[in-house]
Picture 1: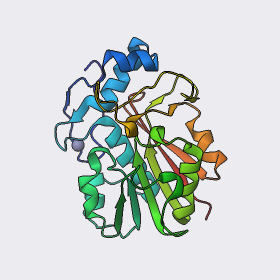
Picture 2: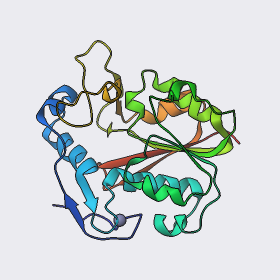
Picture 3: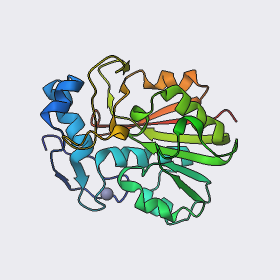
Picture 4: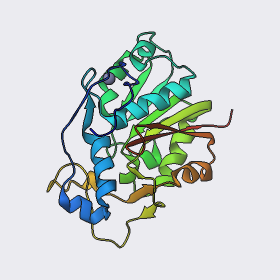
Length: 231
Ligand SMILES: [Zn+2]
């Protein structure tokens, strides 16, 4: 690790381990430069030795803390059993097991449950979470609109998508199929529909979210987004 990483936002751990996760086929499809491939690899493959969470999960935890309006550690915040009505769409990265500490947590799986047509009534949740799922949703704006619909006024969305901050967002329609997951697996639900860039915030704004924020961790490795439904 060339630059020392900041302390973990989840457990305050200060040491990290790295296991490479990207493969050349994905790097080619995504047309990542060596520098981009390096930070995406660290986003996914560098883990806190204390809690085991990778950098993107740490950034997501930071976004949740921002939404909750607290500067405490994520593990200490969870220990207070925050009563937020929370919807987790797909396991939210490495923090997913910890979220069981939320007494009002509802979990759904995409695509078994379609993020573009959530089954929940309007205003059901105070917090909606998803991590590296939106890029697999055919119409990401519709998916975000549904997240907003099921939020109560003043509720928060916190999410990660693999983001290349030196680019703008592009739709992969018409391009050769590209899959996340692991090399050669090519599961349908890992097909990438959208590659996200620095303008990801504008998609949140387009569907009506306000107070849009960004939580970085070891930038540019890890970026999480948060957005509030109009109170
Ligand atoms: Zn940690």
